[in-house]
Image (cartoon, rainbow, N blue to C red; front, side):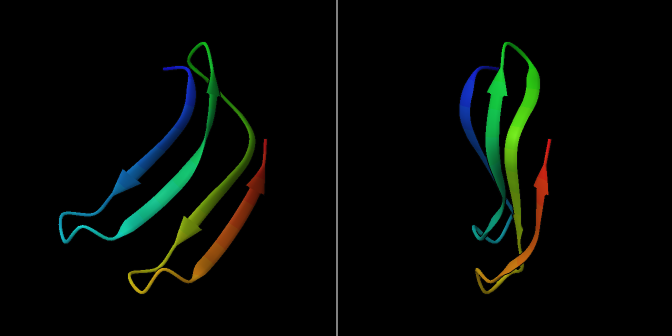
Length: 44
């Protein structure tokens, strides 16, 4: 994995987004609730 990625729930709502550098999570990762509201932001 490399670059920006997004994961979606089975209902189609965005669950998590962030960046990879050659398979390693880097930078800021954001987790969202089912309504799209930011629940958590993590710095890696």
